[in-house]
Image 1: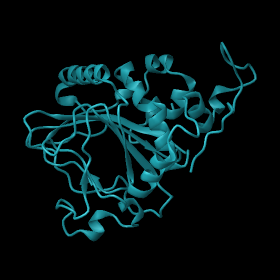
Image 2: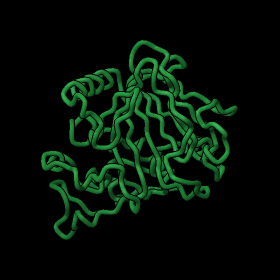
Image 3: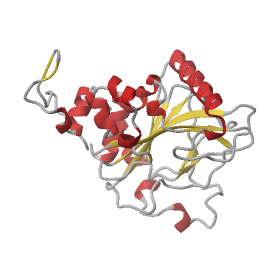
Length: 277
């Protein structure tokens, strides 16, 4: 379990850093504390669920106004970027994707600075974390099905997890519109889907759908088997993915190389540490 002590581990003043402190030497524990993470930010039953099942829904992280605003920002970006949308990381047939959202609107900062989300990510990764990428994915009608997979090339021993994702629901996830499926506890199996299943695209007898209202954030240990399902509805199923890795791992998008001066200028030192930028 990863803990944040009850006392601030660094010296600050009302105007910023103490003169004797060097912001570039901030630790992850310090950054998490500044961003509001404490020992009790997650309840014990929530930590237990993450350990047992490999995923945890956090309801009501975004309110209706935030959901509507972020949805509109994404729609505007998709129009503006056109066929180039998502190219910084990944483009996918059957899904509208956007990438490098850290740089594209200040409203996306919540996705890598929310204390409840950071507390859950820190719990999975033992407090050793940085943002790997911040993207969006909208499964289009009649599309979006994925094979079960883990977001790592091979199995890892329990407790040595390297990656953890958060899905920010901008539409309700329903059986109709292509909700993500997961296999509870599969992160502890020491196996990846292709090594056990003849066809990872097929249903798994233990899979469950992540069904939740818009505004929910689902944290999932990315070694847990998961995949999008077919959107059988008539509108896109939209979500943001704030994906984290351990600090020694390469990021899906190199935040330090891509960060824009105006982005860096508006972010706190703690937020920049989470980006490793």
